[in-house]
Length: 220
Image (tube, rainbow, N blue to C red; front, side, top):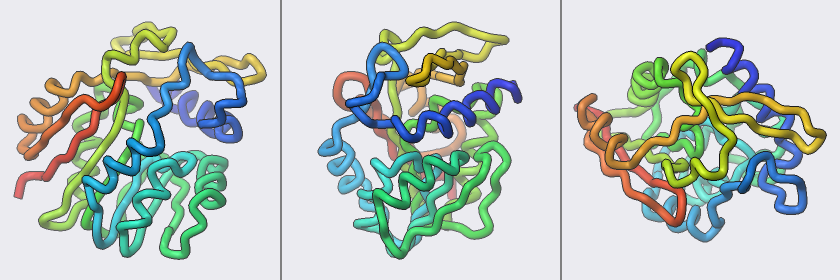
């Protein structure tokens, strides 16, 4: 498991220069990029006010929309190259960038809202409980979490297999180097039910051809 997580983190750091660039070779059968207009609509629906935390902020597709609503934004990612791309793309003075392994990182403060896009699918099943506990620890009373990811409709885009009970996808860099990453395709209804079983008030729905969007409030 630890080797797979290291491979995943290394892959996204090396992929950063090409990530989201339609002119560069895709790393799988389909890039799986969500339209920028849809991202804006979803973040406007979420309306994350106050102090906001973005986990796995990546190259900035969601960050640039979150900063329009947030009083302050803390953006965390395990890839230095992704953070640099994000900083250049967003260029907002009220964003604080933190480079950290999200499987080891712990917050030093709490936030009014937490957002993560295309990250939940990269959390191994054995670490899902700990991840949601982390999200809960990041939220102030009355805070909310929102998330976007791919649902099972996106399986057709991947060369995937299972390794030691962990769903794995193989990704290819533009130079041909391959990496294995964790890739769990959550069905929206099942994810909603699992969150409610943990005490969260959650609503998760399909979006577009291969995505889902969810909002969840932790138990009081």
